[in-house]
Length: 204
Image (cartoon, rainbow, N blue to C red):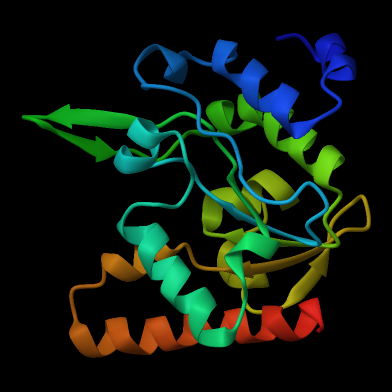
């Protein structure tokens, strides 16, 4: 799908159908399908992760695997209705390394993130969120540029070039990878605190 074709994609449904034919980077060759975002077209808040995982790749829906379940619980605990927000990823195809019968997640590189910015940009244009929540380093660099680190913008509002507000936090999958139980509990609480701040920014 070439940039001029973007003019024909005037709805999320049209873009969701078109992304399945995307060959902008090599990731499409191995993934089951592209996983587009989900949520209301008029959502005021957009949550952005890194890329679909194993379960998302098979089901074609974002944030339904272990990280998605943690995300749902955390949203629920602060009173954010997931059905009111738009949830997507910076990269639409699952990048992985086969290991036996398992598919081990691999982080997308800068070129893959850049190639997929066409689709992510389209989602931003169509939804026009007032606040974008970047979850994890890949989402932050996709939105604010590769020189912006997650730690430099975590837990606060920064302005993107187009005037949209961005709030950065960790990706829920990071919380699942912390081996120390006490540290994991602390970090989960910090993630919930971030979501509480986002809930306040959302207003009633």
